[in-house]
Length: 396
Image (cartoon, rainbow, N blue to C red; front, side, top):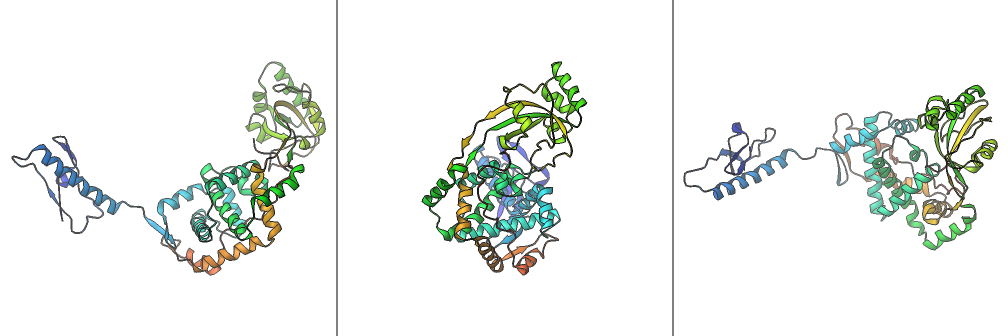
């Protein structure tokens, strides 16, 4: 086969409105393709030269496709994992998930973790597809909304501050696939979900919530200094940023988000009930253990708080649509307390029979290790019951 084009040494050039591409692909000249130069002959018209240039461009596209495709570094049955997939996942590995993996005696190095995570996802999703349990977009969106509002109900992954939206969606897809596998043989109906919700409806009420900014200090004299600055007209956010002793709230200019009424110390609650949005307490409130953001340790000993009320959310009934994922998990637990172990067995069996190959240097033995262990790389989550009144405040 002969493809006509400009000589490689001349590179790319415009000629009579037609582009003459260079047909030289250094890594892989296609077998059977000979590149020769094309020069306009006497008597050739512009159309002829244009047709020749188009044919040359087609040859270039074929040549580039032959040498620039994605590099496959692993396979799980009939699906591939490319080098780009691997490095994209590697960039998303964060301290929280790597630390959790190490604690569970999983991979402690980011490279191995990323590769095993990609294989895990393929195994789980392929098994889900085989069992008719593939997650839908609506199911994934429902899980993500539930996890965002009630992170304590779905485990530490939902509370990971480093997780991007794309990573959260990937995790949601995986968890919904596992949940679908646990629920598939149980045939849970919409009527059962509604009935379970109705039984718990009276307790599924969010209490009144107050969004606050706090200036938290360890001495009464420092609290008085903060109040003096506020009296001068300095903004609450600025005083909180410069004076607060709580590093978390300080970094947020004092904003601690929405706090459920039952979790607020009585003296502080009495004070903020007298405020309108935008107002702050004119005296510091002494508390034994001031409220702290989720996951943060409360300071030891008495502290003084100056609080600003930002917004109030009145009590509300939690609708079924918002809590449906938790209701379904409760029904799974009720119908089959061993559903998690059942799915673990399915994953182990699928792993044993899967054709897994890793060619990335340094990880060639990973497939062998996984198959020898015959263990599902992902531990199915416990079917958590929905929180009647969230133990921790919903995220703002």
